[in-house]
Amino acid sequence: MFEVDIFSYGFVQRALISGLIIAITCSIIGIFLVLKRQSLFGDAISHMAFGGIAIGMYLNFYPIWTAMGFSIVAALAIAKIRQSTKLPSDSMIAVMLSLGLGIGVTLVSLSDGFSVDMFGFLFGSILLVSPEDIYPIIIVAIIVVSITIVYYKKFVYIAFNEDQAKISGIEVEKLNYIFTILVAITIIVSMKLVGILLISSLIVIPNITALLFNSGFKKTLLISLSLSTFSVFAGVVLSYYYNLAPSGLIVLLSASGFIIAFLLKYSIVK
Amino acid sequence: MPLVSVESLSYNYNSQPILENVSFDIEEGDFLGIIGPNGAGKTTLFHCMLGLLNSYSGRISIMNEDIKKSKEMFKTIGYIPQKKSIDQKFPITVQELVSLSLTRKTPKNVVFEILKQVSLYNMKNKIIGQLSGGQQQRVLIAKALVNKPTILMLDEPTNELDQKSQNDFYFLLKELNEKNKITIVWTSHDMDAVNKYANKVSCINKRMFFHGDKRDFFSSENHLKNYSESTMQIHMHEHNI
Image 1 (cartoon, one colour):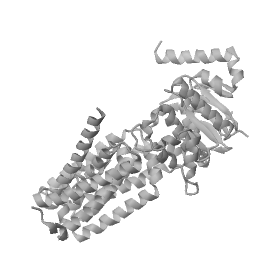
Image 2 (cartoon, one colour):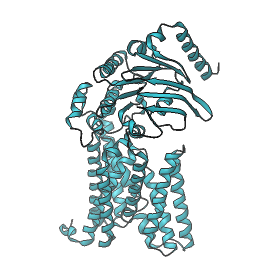
Image 3 (cartoon, one colour):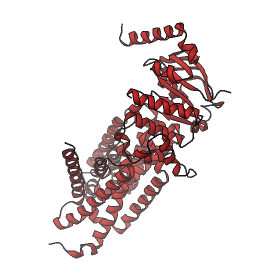
Image 4 (cartoon, chains in turn purple, blue):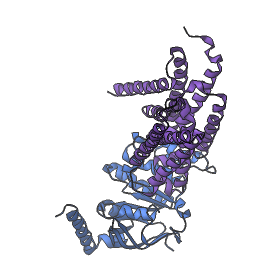
């Protein structure tokens, strides 16, 4: 039933390469977001990116750049407000999320509805990734992985206890800003593949699934990486054979992994 | 020269005074118990001393350096927060957590040596949330010890611990104080423990009621009466009596 040479197609190769790199990057970013109780942060940034894309399209400017600028500013604003006021960070995330969506919907209505491009950004089009699209993905992945390796202990310590990290001399505020920018650029390069509406799931689901295994930090990250890369690989391959939306399938596979792990854990515990 | 000097420290939160004109010194080698009822400002005092709260009036200096001007001296302090501030679901093993304090220059076997010292070597692969409250506190102490601290500050470390765990814990602190020459400062509302283990006592209830040798405090009916009355006042205030 399956064609053996599916991997010889250029568009499948590009989808798999870019998808697997995005899966790794999102997992790494996601574990810190989940542990800092900021799972919805990715959603807020991706919705701000939607507003940024709508602005770019409305102004006939390359939308990725407007999305990039808009998302980074929003991400830094959330981080700043979280650090310098007593406003709950989840409510700030809700404000940014709604604001991005509000801007996007208003501008889309001004430009006589959704275009095909906008649908691509909303729901992803991993099978349409061009060779040029892969370079920014690789660059962002290298940046995210390198910075995480350099600041690994500090990022873990900040996620574990921000106050203790501060007392031990770690520049918590600076590192929070750096991390925030990493989240924003990861989302921007990922959204064309899995879509604005689904990117957050790639950040969150593999990590909360990995947390169910109750392991140490490195093992948890490894489980998350395995699950997210498997979901992307299987999602791309199955979507080709069954003619289904790959981004939706990736999320469904990832969520299935969570449900299975959840049922196994709690049925074993009982 | 005192190791830590707190001079006329006052701190308000929402226009309510939490600390009023608190002054005291901590000398090298002290085993200081800071006692006070819940809501007396003990944790706030720690947060000011650790630079987590900056909007206070007065002056706090560590090793003769004003903490508002330099943060360098914080590297010599090990801080152990209350148990409730430890995320019980955080996916990290004992060894991973203690190793977070390692620098490039620190030999890696230091972690194992310290884990042996705090009797946690056999639990190095356990997840932090799987340990008892007393063991979790020991992990945080082990983590602090990697950096060879001059002072250990512990915020109500024995809350929620049974009697045996409390005794073991204080025994470890005593050992660190005497053998490793680490100055210990801990907050508590357990007068018996402070009487048993500390060499100095600070009695705080927004204001500093007493600071000095523990024998002077516990042998004075006047000091104990003052402390009891202030505790009762807080209790009555909290319950609108």
